[in-house]
Image 1: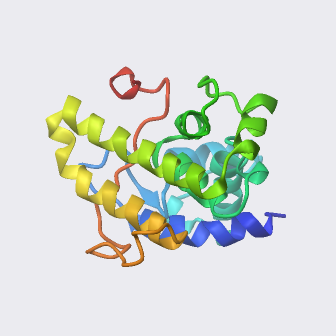
Image 2: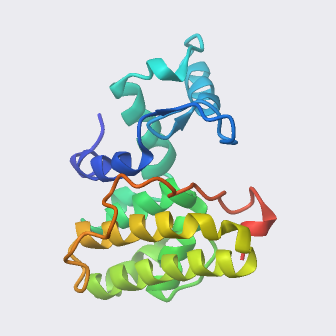
Length: 203
């Protein structure tokens, strides 16, 4: 049974992941609420179920896929409210491994992508507001560095920053009281490969 914290965090993420998409130029292929056909097929096989069209994805399946894939691996369940949402949304947008590295950098501990006892102690020792602000700043700096290294990704920057600023608004960070222009449904918050999936994104 998904936790109350997970259930409270999921709606924000889903507003950005959208509904059913089957665009010929989308490398993810058929996708429903952020779940690709490939991910859905693999999940159903692990449950001993026959594969089927991701368009038929059920809400209960959706919750289980997000919890098992993006909430528990980066240990969102060990974090305070608000920080757990920031961490979860980052894991969905750019992978659990990168999310843990961002958290470690913001907490000032060793950055190795392994959320162990040292990371947990470092996180608990931080002021929560400062930690969240630093985490979001780290995420923004990464987006901007991506575009600096590869100008063709500039088309996605507005969507990435709108998503991040909507997240800052959602958790009440000072200076982000107003919703970003375009609202939370603006397209363009493209997912980024996790650490180890594409060397061009690993820096």
